[in-house]
Length: 121
Length: 106
Image (tube, rainbow over all chains, first blue to last red; front, side, top):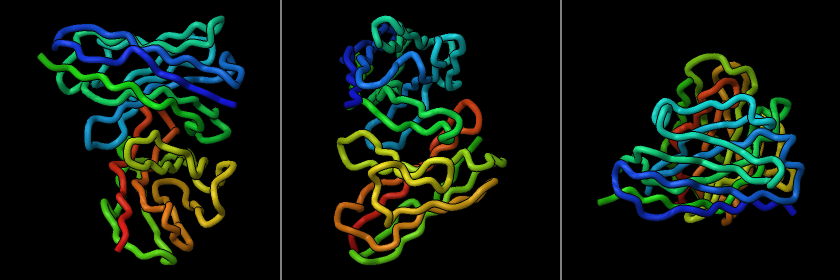
């Protein structure tokens, strides 16, 4: 069955860095775009970033552009999110999610369980 | 593209028919998806491409619309349907979600 498992969350000071990982299994990872979506405590969902199936194109929300970097290793079925210059407002649960593709409205059909990132001094 | 859901919260009873609306700030064709999220859990996809039911989702859920106006309808509320619902546009990046609609038991 499809599984997405995030790791790497934790507490970091403002200005610090953290790298999230998402281990994927159960589908052909190299065929699909992948996203990171976050949710601040008690708030709604915020789309963060997308990487296309081959890593060729990457897109970012304005709120993280220049600070966050998405990447993937198709040989290892791994997705990553490098987060630098972290701010208090980046505190959230971060989900990795699989994109079904444009025929399916670019909907996210599988999600990880989430990784909590807390930015605090 | 800004996505606006209404209402932000809704009280209803088991067996009720409920409709949630999502409006896009510009035309997104049918690149509109609906998710359900329960406390402490990841969102789950209900409807993709405005009106297609995701595999495994009960047929009490349905979606409609195109362009800028969309609706999610639950034809007969079940106890497990009380949750928060989000719309999401997949038309262009940055992809965006509505602010959510919290469906509570009356």
